[in-house]
Amino acid sequence: MNEQPTLNDLKAFAAIVAHRSFRQAADELGLSPSSLSHMMRGLERMMGVRLLNRTTRSVSPTEAGDQLVARLRPVLEDLSIALDEVGTFRDRPSGSIRINASEPAARVLLQTVVPSFLARYPEVALDLTTDGRLTDIVAGGFDAGVRLGEAVPRDMIAVPFGGDVRFIAVASPAYLKAHRAPKVPDDLKQHACIRFRLPSGKPYRWEFSRRGQEIEVDVPGALTLDHLGLMTEAAVDGLGIAYVVDRSAQPYLESGQLKQVLADWSPAIPGLFLYYPGHRHVPAGLRAFIDVLKAQRIEAPPTPLPRRAPSTRQPRRPPTHK
Image (tube, rainbow, N blue to C red; front, top):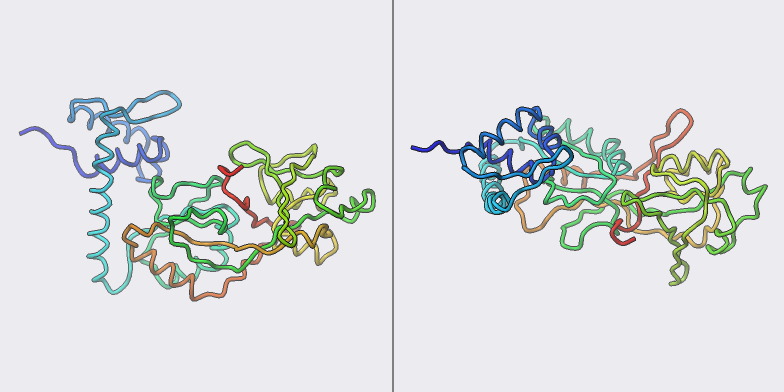
């Protein structure tokens, strides 16, 4: 009788294809990359066909690998559902849940939902992954994602929390003393603006609206950052005007270290949402997490550092829209 691949072999293969990375798949499975590579060589030997194209920088499925993983995904998903359904006979949820979130959203969860959830459901392991890009949570093997409402895919079930947010333009008193404050968004073109680079590499256009009029400004500026919290810090230091979430700037507005400009061009928009695919079985652990999320009144306060406060802003639209 020919040797057959094990379930662990097939799960490992599916994880590699999902991540397009031996290292990331190994991290997910709790294995070393070398052990995972050895497993795949054994799998290919048993199958008698090459399943993965490997280079020093990337890994991708061959045509045979694509066909295999296409058949495996629904089987592995059905298996996960079956095991989770059996788990509902337990008194309490167990297992693990994987949630993908932006770094600022993860900070909000860690300050609010996560402590209560872990205390109430110690049998559930929570894997919270931060990612600046808008990740496909299904392809990435996540149970749920957390993003601003404008970035949530339309085919997902979304649970709001934390209330609305506002994105505001701020600058230090010293900067505004040396430069006339902008009155309309187009005035920003005459200012030193602290620009933000999206994960795609493109500069983010600042977005404003007032009484139904929407304006996007490709602001000028000698300084471009890729970390939203640093934008607030740079504005405090007088390096220009920054466009940040109001909650991250609030401590500095209250202390007088920052002042808001273009206030009447900064309406509130829907805040954070936890989202998950509606066509898939919802794991018991995720249902419990959502219950804790809904039970709390989350105001999403910023977490002040000794001198700074981290930003909780995400780009208002998915990077693919820019």
